[in-house]
Image (cartoon, rainbow, N blue to C red; front, side):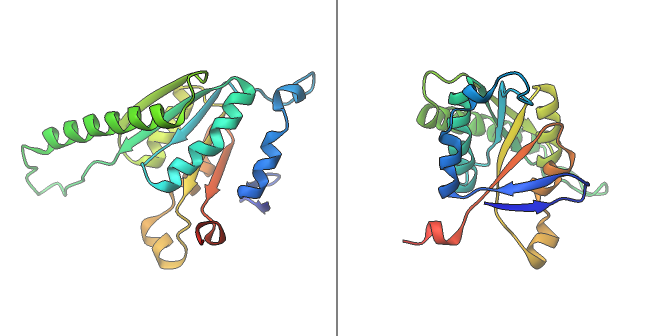
Length: 188
């Protein structure tokens, strides 16, 4: 586990790896007594269907089970932006509708494969900038925790691609657990 300071005084980000899952095995429900700072009722997991985001769901499941929390899967369709002086093809709305339909099917399939029948779940498909839509969904759904993946881009790739996870951490209305793929975990 790594603990890193954030730009806000008094806040830190904890990075967990597979060995740290043992920390999750302790019964959080037992720890929730008087003085326990929060309860988890809604755990939001943004997914882009990459292996990274599926891994974030794997971290969310034991917490949902321990707390009796609902898993909220969110998939954001990023629209294609055109300059003002460019004519937008008429098919754009049709393409967006197809993407939403395919996203819904993939969310349903992911939920059916990964989420046990005893865990309550909800699926949300939305269109917009991923970080903004995730933050808005977390607020509107009263998320107590967001668990999301990061692709771990650094350097120029990070500068040009930006970091959805970083923006969510900075602006989310609730705590955010960021799951990062480790090289030593993916090598056989």
